[in-house]
Length: 344
Image 1 (cartoon, helix red, strand yellow):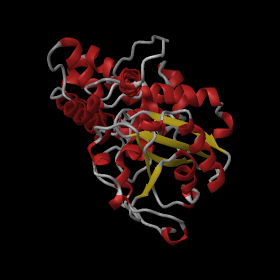
Image 2: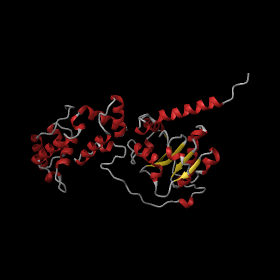
Image 3: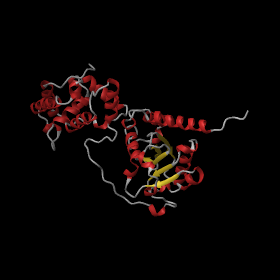
Image 4: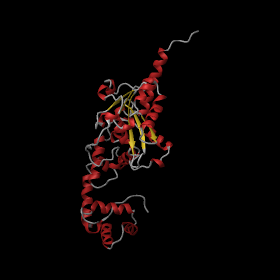
């Protein structure tokens, strides 16, 4: 079968209608027309009338008219007109880049604006409105339209010992200009007890992640201490977390490593928006239905590395790894310049 995709013709639509009326399956129709089964199911899904079955709601003439209308609308979008650019954007989205990162990287490479991130979003949401659901699933948040999600539920604030509110956190943390301030959260999955502990450095956006044996507080505290113990004290100053019981042993970080811990207000995850965004990006590669039992530690490390080596608009299209390494170099230089000379 030819790998080059060709638009479904009116003649093929008439044949699809006839064979569907005969009760043939999408796979059987695809074999008869020399098409992929997904092409047939997509054609029926996009062009059938709503609230009716495919066999009753599909009309070949109406389907051809809708196709022509969509092509006329698509002509408004640069990505629809420029196949090479569309393929480039699609490949970057598959690699985990956001529209802003794609647009910024193209601007840096060519010295001018090739396409804006807003144009990419408009094209994606247009495709979703046309029942082409493949594009929006490549977005970091996998949303088919813009909007905010509401949140609800309880909060075990009263059960957390030595809890300090985020409102008492030093103001310098908000500016993201000084390193060493982190956010932490658990990335949960559909299977009970499966979780990944994620920590996120606010200035560089560097991400650390390790699978947890459970949501219990003791292993979470142990993993946090393991992650931070190897860092210089100047790069492990504060940690902002939510009010989940998994962080009930947070005070061990302050007692053993000198890390001050601060808690968001109940039902206010946006107060640690950096890690919320980071987890949303990781969801592209690790959706909630993922079975962590089938994911090795090496595979998880590769996913985290891919995140840390993706350029970010907020970093001037540097990667989190590059910014964090620069902070390490600056810290090392300060130590060398302030250390006393060796005695002769």
